[in-house]
Amino acid sequence: MALVLRGGPRGGPHARPAGRGRGLPGLGVVAPRRGIDGAREFFALLDTFVVHEFRVLDLLASPTQVVAQIVIELTYPSGGRVRDEELHLWRFDDDHKIAALRHYVDTAKHIAAWNGEDTTRRGS
Image (cartoon, rainbow, N blue to C red; front, side, top):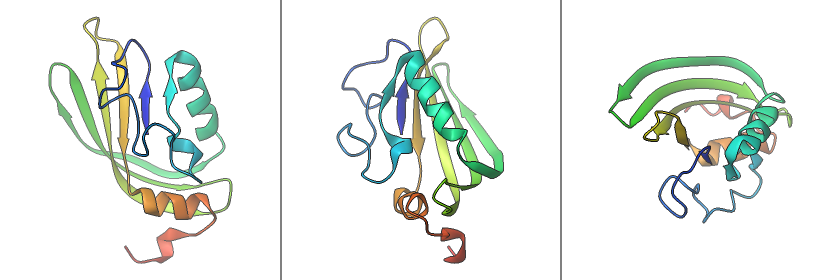
């Protein structure tokens, strides 16, 4: 999932998620979004999930980026459940405002959970 909040590059690596900018079929959470309205839409969608755990394991930083290593466990509105270790890459502009967020996840696991599977029973 990529979210460009403010003046990010168009067509650059932070502008679109995998799937050539159309999002992934069956996984609305990774649809590309832009600007404040896109952020609002994304967080409104997150509000429909039940989050069981959200834990920051580590942070890596440079002058223009921060990566958060996350463990998350959640249930989607479909009833599907997922536990995943993710990376959230935050990029900042020259004014130190958020320019983009890139979300690295196990997309196959999230798609299965989005479609109703409890992937926490898989054992991996």
